[in-house]
Structures are given as C-alpha cells and as structure tokens.
Length: 242
Image (cartoon, rainbow, N blue to C red; front, side, top):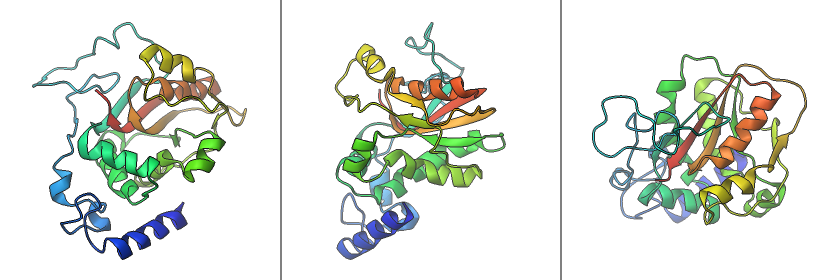
C-alpha cells in the first residue's frame, strides 16, 4: 500500500507539480492532501448536527440529541455511525476519482477529512482495531487497492490501534449498491461477509468505509464482528449520503 501511495504521489508530482488535483490552478501538496484551500471550501462538514444513531446530517440549528425517522425502531448490528462530510461536490468527486479512476493521491485528502472529524470522539477510548470494509477478491483485482484501507490506515495510526484486515472477508461479489433501493441494498449484502478466522474477539471496534448511505454494508460487517464476540462496533465513513 505504501508503495502504491508513493508511486501515485510521484506521478502527481510529475504531472501536477505542487498544484491542486481538482482545479489545477492553485498550489497544493501532501500537507493539504493535494487539494487547495479554495477547493476544500466546497466540502460540507457534518460535525455534531446529525442523527445520533446513523449520522444523517440535519439542516438548520439543532441544540439537542435527535434520532432520524429511519432509525426509529430500526435495528442495526453497529452501535453508532458517523461521517465526516456530506457526500456531494468536492468530497464525492474525490471519492469517485480515488475508487474508479485510480488516483490514489485523493486518499490523502479524504483520510485527512476522516481523521480530523473522527479523532476527537474516538481518542481516549480503548479500541481493539480499525476494520476497513473489505472488497471481494475480484473487485480488489480490478481496482488494485481497497479504498477503505487507504482511508482507515491514517486513522488507525493516529489512534495507535491495529488496522485489522484478517477478521472479515467478503465472500460474495455483490451488485453495486449505488443504484439499489434501501431494501435491495440490505438483501444485496445480507450474506456477503463472513468471518475470516473463527477465534473470538472482545472489546470495541471501528469500521471504516468511504460512503455511508443506508448503512447496509457496514451493518453486515458489524454483524460479523458482533458474531465473533465484539462488545461494541462504531462506524466511521468519510462521507454521508443524504
């Protein structure tokens, strides 16, 4: 992974020397994730103004803790889900270019958004590991990297906990979730994930993904961790679809 990142950054330096990877006009380098401050202004951060269960952002000013309509009466394997920014504009374009156009330098920008948002609430607690949502081997071969791993690694390092990729395996190459309804998303991933190892686990765990929409994918991963014995599972995503 480090080799791919270094290669990507070298290529970026040759093609776009110290210039924003989005607008190609203003200066930007690794310190600001290769996205200039001007383009970064297009990111809408969520903060604490969101559903306390699934992280869905609220509009307007919310002064108390709220649960959205979708979460009332809903059952999730994870205990809480949060996201750093809204899945739109600059953030969504960066995610798509990382995943589908193989532009790995965007992982620097996106992981920075994630770590900046997640670290204050996660630091100081005891975590057993950070689990990136796994890709099926066919998709991994096609994409050449797992974007969730790229996003999760800096957060795990900042927390001082292991990045764990050998607990959950994606056994089914499911359809893309993007075009499916809420019910179809749940059915699509219901049996997609299985334990990679059978030994039990304990304590609190963090799942990381790029985009959180209905929570079906991360819920399926959380169900595996809970089945292995995890006491608490928190989800953090870079972006939250609205």
